[in-house]
Every structure is written in C-alpha cells, then in structure tokens.
Image 1 (cartoon, one colour):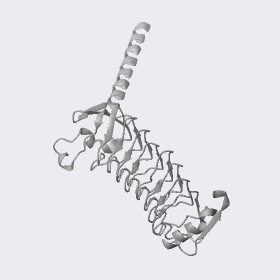
Image 2 (image 1 turned 180 degrees about the vertical axis):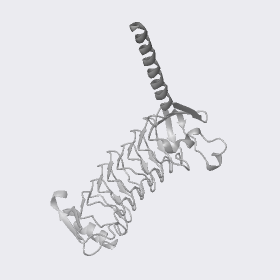
Image 3 (image 1 turned 90 degrees about the vertical axis):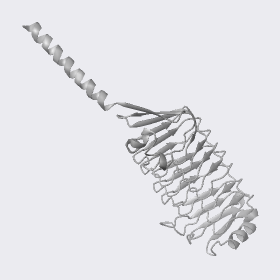
Image 4 (image 1 turned 135 degrees about the vertical axis):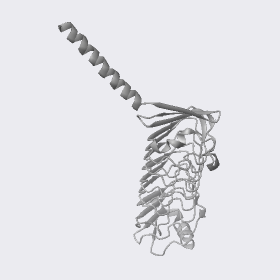
Length: 304
C-alpha cells in the first residue's frame, strides 16, 4: 500500500513538473525570421529581447512594403523591450523603427561593427532610456533619435558627424558626453532638450554647430581649447522653458567664426569668461553678432 502511494505521488509530481515546464515553454517562445538575404532576427517572448544579426546593411523598409513583404518584426515591434544589433551589421537603415515604431523599447545596444545609424532610425521611441553606441560608429544621421526618451547620451570618439536634429526634442535627456575625438557637434543636434543640464566637450572639439543646444537647461558651459567656430544660436535660450545659463567659460583662443545670436535670450546673470589676451577681440565679435549689452564679458589671466 505504501509503495502504491509512493508511486502515485511520484507520478503526480511528474505531471506537475511537466505542466510547469510546458507553461514555461509556452511563455518563452523564441520567434525567428529573416529580412532580405543578409539579416536574421530572434525575439524572446518572455524576456522581450529582440536580437538582429547578419552582415552589411539592414535594408530600408518602405511604407509600400508593409502589406507585401514586411519583416515579421514589424508586427511585434510594440512588444519589444530591449534590442541588440550585432554580428557584422554595418548600417542601420533609415526609418528602421518603421511606422509602428519601437514604442515600448527601453534599451538599445549596438554591436562593434555598426558604422552608421540611418535617418530617423529610432525616431519616436518614447520609452527608450538608454543606448550603448559602439566605438567604430561614424555617422548618426538626421533625426536618428528624435523624440526618444533617452536620459543620457555618450557619443563615442569615432563619430565624425552628428546629423541635423539627431537628438531633437528628447524631453528627458539630462546629460551629453562627447568623447575625445569628436570634432563637431552637428547642427541643432541637441536642440529643444528642455532637461539637458550637462554637456561635456572634448579637447578635440573644433566646431559647435548652429542651434546645437538651443532651448536647453544648461547652467554652465566650458568651451575647450581647440574650438574655432560657434554657430548661430548655439546656446539660444529664447524659447527655453526656463532661462538657466549663468556661466560660460571660453578656453579657446582660436575662434575665428562667430554665429549670430549665440546667446540669444540670455539671462541678465550670464557672465562669459574668456582668455585675457582675447577679451577685446572676442567681446567686439560677440557684441557685433547680437550679444545683449547686459551680459558681462570678463578676461581671465588664467585662461591665457
């Protein structure tokens, strides 16, 4: 009798385990697919992780293809929480997020072989909190992360160009770091980021593009030694939610190109510190380009 009870209990336990395993298996299906001849992808329905691999360029998906031959990831894109693009993929296509977008994606990691992020590739990903951009990346094209939910961005040293409006209107972006090696911020690249309080420029930087940090929440800015050009309205605060910029330190003695209204809408508390040897030249140039008369320009011997 005891043995019979033990056998029944054993069988019952096996059934429970099998049921649990079946349930887990059902929850953790791996969906797979291909796009064109060079790209494969997997999606884990349990972890919500989407992985793209292959070689070369991820081909652009056009609106007209949605009903004809769209990759199946289009229909699960709103379920994706994290994404990795790896293997020998070198370019992420324009408008990779497609019409439906990656509306619930929170993290993105790019493999070491990515060289270019196409136009509008991750446009309008409102929950995208973090992105890991790889060393070796060269181009971040127009509108690449526009309207995304990024909190901070680190631009790797290999980036040659940040496209127009690449991080435009990222409403939660607070910190931007440009690694040593980056030479140009691009035009309007971080424009209308109302919570952007910190930006770190590298010594390698030569150009701050027009409207690059317009309507941000920057409080202090340090412009490094090798900058030769600052574009129109680069730090314009006229349309900012709140005028915050109080101190600008210009270390460079090489600036020869000054845009119009660089500090348009400036606070009455703004003080611009420049090298003592360049004080007269820089102040005359800034005033001629629209610097308000109430903004103080101070020559600092410690800056050269």
